[in-house]
Length: 249
Image (tube, rainbow, N blue to C red; front, side, top):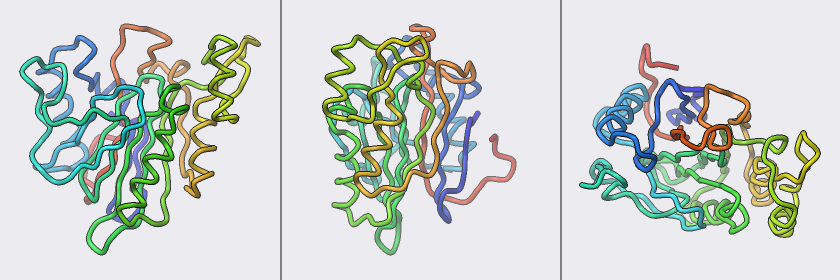
């Protein structure tokens, strides 16, 4: 169910799911009831109890949503989006469980010291447009506005620079904003290294990178849009709570 999971700080957990958890997205043509059931199973494995992971309607932008405590994220009548899911590409909270969905884009989990009661949590969806638009520093800034200090990041699996071929002008446009993203693929063609670009932006903001996942296109245990355009989405997750004995790893 999880390609990676760890207690990243006392009482704070981060994880990335894999194909064993199934598709967790409502916007890829999957049966909404089945998707909701898979999300519930992930929540059970994480030991959330009555809490629910909050998902976003992701649009490859740089909007950051602040998530406060409330009811579970339920699917709308159409089943295509969550009725209370924000349209954004990053979310932050002071303890609410958060989720970001990807299938080649970079999923980022952020954790920071906050107030006396709860840590400050964040998730970011950083595809090529969002990386260039600054969604990563925008999320860090929003966390700091909540009083976050000592921010750390866990970068989940995404397509690597060896595999992400793009047109030359696209590489130039992105690298003009994020120089670390410039690369050449394994085939010698123009490419973009999104994880390197994300890491450079985080480090420029003084954020420590604690984990870097592998390549989605190369790992068949993960969803990859570049490998198969008719694919699902796995999730990056962050939540608070004790470990559940026997929970799926």
